[in-house]
Length: 322
Image: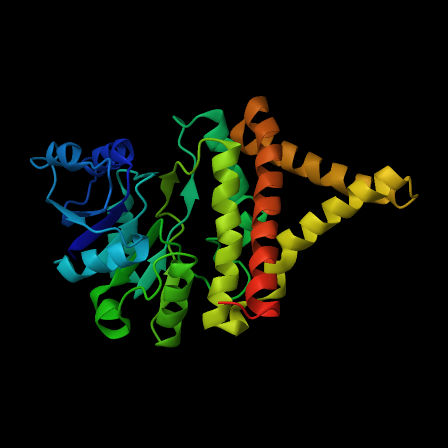
C-alpha cells in the first residue's frame, strides 16, 4: 500500500519543518509527501527543499483558496492508493503509517480518522489547550471518539481517504467552516466504511495562547451552523451545549449581582465543573500548571464556540441570511 500524505500550508514555515522532520522517522516507507503552499507570503520553499534527499517530496505553490481546496489540489496530483491529510501544526509518531497499514490490511476502512494528543515537548499552554480539545468535560468529549454521539466524522488534522473515495465522492466542496465534517458526511452517504483508528494518533500543537485559541473556537462554532446549511439533520442537541453553557455563565453572573438565592446553586455547579477540569487534567498531565491553565482553556473553548454558534444561528437560521 502506497500512501500520499497531503499537507496544506499557509504562512507557517517553521511548522512544516517540524512536521517533515517527524515524517523522516517513519518505520513504514511506502509513501510520498505533497506540500501545497496556499498562496503564502512567508513561504516554505527553501525549508521543504532541504528535505528533498530524505523524503519522496513534492512542493507546489498555488493561489490562496483555503485548506479544503488546497487538499483537492493535492488529491489531483497524488500517486498513492490512499491519501492521508495532516495539518501543518502536527507531529507524527514514527509508527503512524505502520499502524495505519496494519489496520487497513486487517480491517479495511475507506476513510478513517485518528485522535490527537500533546507531545512531551509542548509548552504548558499547548498541553492545556490539547487537554481541553480532547476532554470529556468539553466539546472535546464528542470529537474523535468512536464512542461519541452519532456517526464518527474524521477531522482533517488527521484523516485518511482511499483513492476510490476521491474518485467516487470527489473532494471538498467548501474550503473552510467545517469542510472536513461536510466531506465525512458525504462519504458516509455514499456507502463507504469510515472508522476511527485509535492508535493512529498525532501530536497536535494547535494554538499557543488563549487569544488564538478563542479565535479558533469561535470559528468552529460558526462552522457547525455552516454544516447545518448543507445537512440540517446534523445539527443535534449536543451541539447546543457550549451555547447553553455560555448563557448559563451569563445568568450566573446576573444572579450573583442581583443577590438572588438561586445564585448559590449556579455557583455550586460552576465550582464542581472547575474541580472536575482541574483534577482530571492534573491526573492526565501530572502538572499543576497545566491543570490550572486547563481551567481557562476549557472556559474559553466553550464560550468561544458558544458565541460563534449563537452568532451564526441567529444570522443564518433565524434571519435566513447567507
